Amino acid sequence: MTEPQLSVVVPVFNEQDNAAPLVGEIVAALRGNALLQGGDFEIVYVDDNSRDATLATLHRLRAEVPELRVLHHVAQSGQSTAIRNGVKAARGQWIATLDGDGQNDPADIPKLLAERAGAEPAVKLFAGWRVHRQDSGSKRWASKIANAIRARMLRDATPDTGCGIKLFERDAFLDLPHFNHMHRYLPALFQRAGWKTVSVPVNHRARSSGVSKYNNLNRALVGIADLRGVAWLIRRGKVTAVEEVS
Image (cartoon, rainbow, N blue to C red; front, side, top):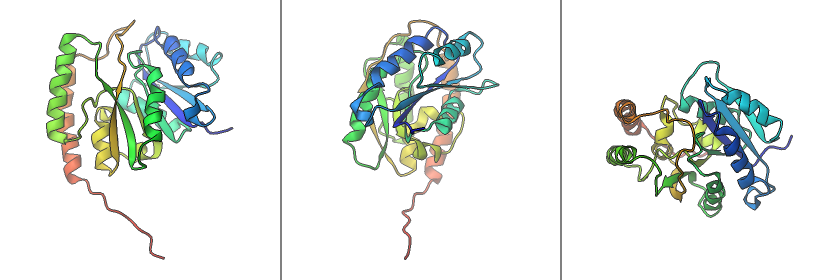
């Protein structure tokens, strides 16, 4: 089997009504796309032990979409673990991620691929930047404050680290330290590993169905501990060039 040029990893939990529309949009954005050098891609959905009909919907879609693969967590493990397991199972050398709620626009994946085509090899992460967020006012303000605190502590020069749509090299990602909620700190972690990152303005849409799995309070509580942990990792990290002696 030919390895795909790109793997699109989508973590989901209780998104039964968003699965089919989002898969259709991913297919429409990527089938035959010249940036994929032949158009080969796969879609890897990771169901985080959903309690609704998400898994059944994905099984039905597999018969209609040959690019679709479905993984299932036997116990709910969180978004970061779902992303990592999807990346580990992916066959593409480059990974695009999308949130499963449909707020990220799959039409932006070719935009990230175009940025990669013109970037230097040291850039291993292209992070979406939701310039015009379609969330509630309280959620936008909470994210603005959190981003300001994160930028001050981590100095990752990233305006929107929490955007779900990203493009990164598979091997570079799997070399990063893994912990719960790590997906919110990928720019800082890539930079810690010695790679460069680029933020790319992308579209953002209102949720059409389902409910958000987070609220401002639980984000803030876990965010404080996470920030301290990531800041510690950055302080303790060291990147050294290695050359082979002949």
